[in-house]
Length: 409
Image (cartoon, rainbow, N blue to C red; front, side, top):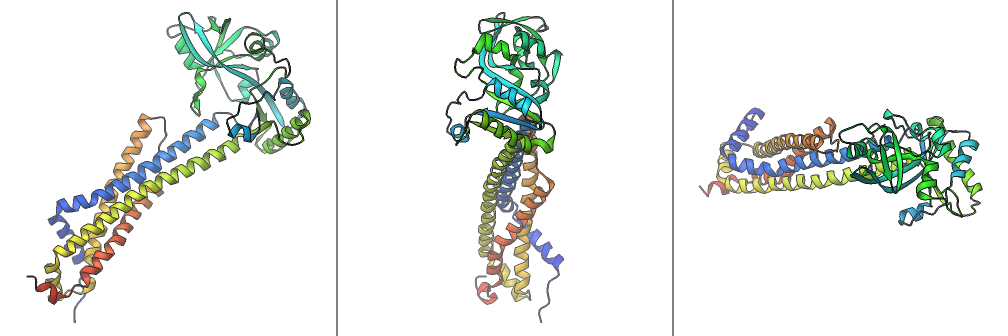
């Protein structure tokens, strides 16, 4: 009766066979290495994109609602926003919506901002003193716009941190003069760095009183009055966001006498986060699937090499079976060889992927990262692929007839 070969002996023989064919073993592992590295890298980059987008949305402010002109369909189609929001709408929201804490109306336009021989084209915001707390901005030097500036339509400006460096690289900006369009403004403050939101660098913005914006730059619409680009609304607390959104919708529908489609859109930060999370989550899944295809190709490579190995080792298999080896012993040896190739390749690929993710996080704005669970799953998946694709060659080797195999000696 044939005795079962000890597991340690099976592993020893499998490792000895792999060592005797080092070049083939290394080339076989290449597919798994590339596959694992691809999965780790692509998932890490996708996760980084998700974290970057969420971080930028969090910079917009806490408990904030954004009211913008135009309906959802028009905005999806890229239609120019109609001038349906006016300053009186913002004032009505502030005075009539009980769940609202602060309201910050905004007019913005692109202008050339010049200081001496230096100039920069960027967004100029007409704002009120409420803009700072609603949007969670901070002033690094000087001050921001106050109620007196708005009431007197004063010609003062607050510069973003990057814009200050562009216009005044060697000296202080406070008290200096800048020109916006054809108008002169005194710099009274410099904002603290805020970062970018969806590709727009908020540190290159300029802020002036909203009344000054109307009187000196944009003008007053003869039909609509003071048209706004947006209204930022801060709810009293996180639990008041839904109530504030409902009340603002009802108030503006009454003010605009809307019977059918709204001519405005109210969006919360949570709405934007949900949309962004859905998009970036799908992106991460797609990137992971692309990397998984590479891993699958690596598994097919293992199967092909192992099938070739079975053909080349026909005599060895026949001799072992003639000397008493069981079919299960041969099966186990080939499965161990496949598992070792896949697992070792998976480990090397994982290290390469982790290194690439760290490099991306270090040299790009993406906070690329990968969780320990994903690493374990990827390594386990590569080992499973080795077992799965090693079954066919192993079964073929186990079924070889020793008499037929020995005839080729």
